[in-house]
Length: 107
Image 1 (spheres, rainbow, N blue to C red):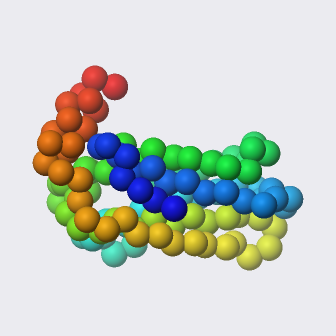
Image 2: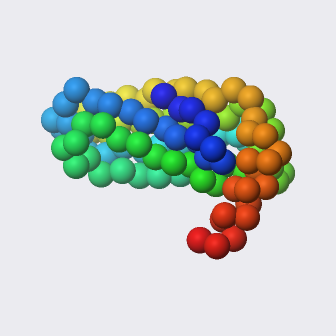
């Protein structure tokens, strides 16, 4: 599941078991991109519930993202990888974009 969280997008997922899971790859595709790009690799920790805050939402090939953003979670293991996709519709307001840009300057 992916939802707007202030000036970021929070992507959350939960698994029933991590038996044979070697990792999770979280990828993003903006409207101006043709392919997904891996933005985070997560090693299983046994907690079964994970969350990632995409704070680089405003950076794309053409500058600020406009329109829906798609996220793909790939579950890695010894067998075939399993991929799940979700899309966040709409855009963050201009005020949230500006605040996100200001905050990113001080990280």
